[in-house]
Length: 456
Ligand SMILES: *Cc1c(COP(=O)(O)O)cnc(C)c1O
Image 1 (cartoon, rainbow, N blue to C red):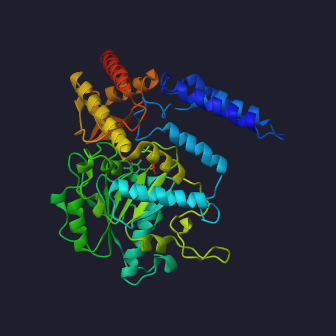
Image 2 (tube, rainbow, N blue to C red):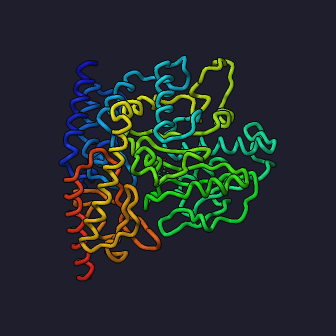
Image 3 (cartoon, rainbow, N blue to C red):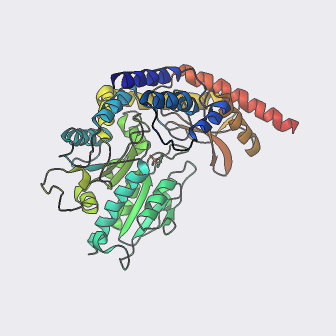
């Protein structure tokens, strides 16, 4: 075992050390080589060291260097070295975090992780939390709590009796809500399309001046901290006051945007967010812990526990906090370990510095691209930049070139009806030099794409 684990650690360290210089996208040859994985399941086993050697030889080159400092696609955080190390240790523990009796360590660390995050985000004392795979399932858990609580107010037990014949819930969603909230609503039987949509402004934030006069109770309002393109957040104070008139539950999808609250200089971006009833966020994005790591917070612990709690003859009934009474899962890994490792290693000022550094890099990208003659389509208020690299066809060609060149990786999007490129800076590993190298590559590729367009 020692040789196997030490050899694997050396391979993993080599992989991480190569990230600063390797091409961000895998080469076409590396992708083609992945076909070697497609063998029939063997009758007889292979030695452990050969298994790992093959995973490394074929698998490592086929990965995307999203853990490095020049990946700006989607909104993808890297992983801090201390969180990779904590993940290794937790994997060696192989704990099931469902019940405290299965892992006192996992249960205690989980409580600490939740308490620290509640503190970091400035959420109300007593807020309950739950771990999930990502922000999608965190919104699912939070909205299950909302569904439970709002229907209980009208004397309907949704957990026992389901939604058939239940009083209808009004669900309200911003026009620019992330698609994952629609998925969570669909899974909860609340319907992806059966929603009232609130108009958004040019930055994608809900317009406080265009809220309908009234909504019918029971109601759930879904807002957002951090638009996945522009980084803009909804006006939480206005939404809270408006939701209160219908006694509505206010949920916030803050997959990355909630982390603005961890920085004194960025906190104004999410003013009033602590007045919501529930929040979803990701530790695998801006906190830079390994996948997968989502968290839901619910102001009223009874709403979350009411929606999730389960009884069975073999399960403990003591009143201690049992992790699995708050999660949609039974068995799951101990996600709190990496979160505590990140927060303990960074401290409050380190988290703020990580957030602020990413935002500074985003502003530098906008400045550099503007200086090169490109149009920045969003107000760069957080870590997101939306840039037009020409007409729709030129933009698509430019992005393809940028990805192929491999200096950095950015993806396409559509913003206010135009094709654009999206830059998300969400990694501790991004240095000033990475931004400058990436700017040169983007400008070079966009110019080449524009020339090939003229030739055509
Ligand atoms: C990434 C993201 C999600 C989805 O999160 P997952 O962790 O992928 O489930 C939801 N909302 C926003 C705003 C996001 O950026």
